[in-house]
Image 1: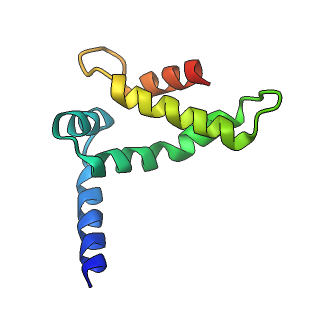
Image 2: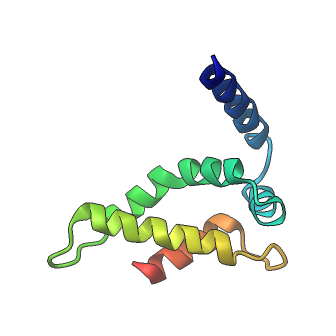
Length: 101
């Protein structure tokens, strides 16, 4: 019963996050230490990171290792993004991800 209540609460939070821009989500993560917002944006961009990782080939590297490196780069983009710059979060994340992998 408690698990259902928690799941419903998570769904409600995710629905609220759908209304926010990526930049607003980053503020929510940084200013309020909102782990649900962090989970939301990571899940939102997971396929984006996977698609970008497919374009890389490293001798001796497993595909999943490259995807993991991409996710680490994505997490660093969340950490380092600044709203006062002219770049969108997506463009910034792509740049950081490319540099990281």
